[in-house]
Length: 73
Image (cartoon, rainbow, N blue to C red; front, side, top):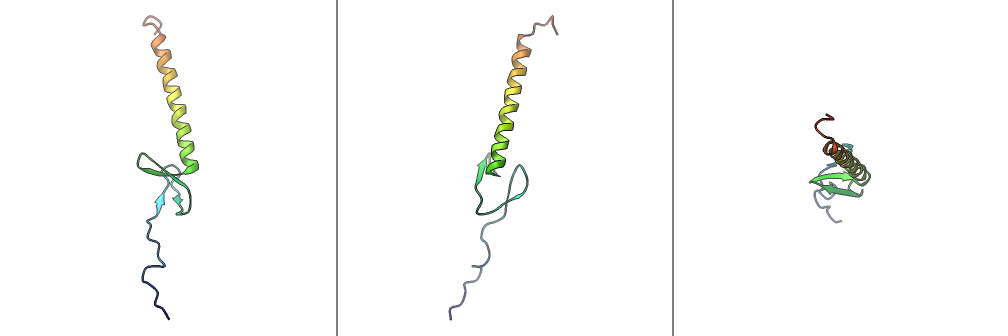
C-alpha cells in the first residue's frame, strides 16, 4: 500500500471574500480582481454599473452648475 502524502486532502488556497457582497468566492467560481479586490463576476458587473451611473450623475451636475450664472444662485 502507498502512504498518502500529508496535506494532500487540505486545500492550499486561502478563502477569498467578495468585496461587494462579502460572501466567500468558491475556488471553482469565476472571479474578477479590480483595484486589488476580488469580486464574484456578477458583483463586479453591478459595481461597474453603479460607478458608471454615479459618474454620469456627477458630470451632469457639474455641467448644470457650470451653466448657471452667479446671479441665478
